[in-house]
Amino acid sequence: MNTPAGKLGFSAEDYLAWEECQDAKHEYVAGEVFAMVGARREHVVVTPNLASALKQRLRGGPCQAYVSDLKLRVEAANAFFYPDVMVSCDQRDHEASLFIAHPTLIVEVLSDSTAAYDRGDKFAAYRTLPSLLEYVVVDIRARRLETFRRASDGDWLFHDYGPDSETCPFASLAVSVPLDEIFENLSAEASTASPQDSSPGAST
Image (cartoon, rainbow, N blue to C red; front, top):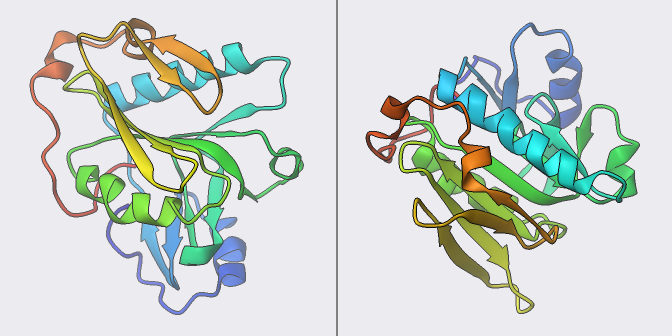
């Protein structure tokens, strides 16, 4: 999420119509729209790495992986987001055109400016999705995946997969992906330090 784009009081329907005419992407939260800006190289490398890995492992089944050009509707939060990677196993999403609303898995790749938001308010919004079973944030610089899984009682359980882990299991999909595959083609300087918590801004 970035700075407000100057549009206040939009309804969800107004936003969808307006967004289709824009050259850049905007997220929508409770009547306000926020312009998205370009991501750093390592972000652009990791996102398709992970989406492609999931797509390969899910081929032939009911679940499909989607990347950040597709919107996610979070009705309870009156919001539309562009998650970096989503997987839905719901036929309603596979037949949708503008957005999906029933993901099983959401992945956000952290940037310095969005780390606090992705771990905080955005995750709080995502937790209102009844279909969501797993939320993953990818810390590129630490070579770590922070995984939150919904338990049967509704609590969210945290699992950490860092440099000492060979693979990251995506339990909601019953697949695993090696960390080397997720972080393939990254330069050494992309792992100097973990993103610092800050307010929303910059890239998704």
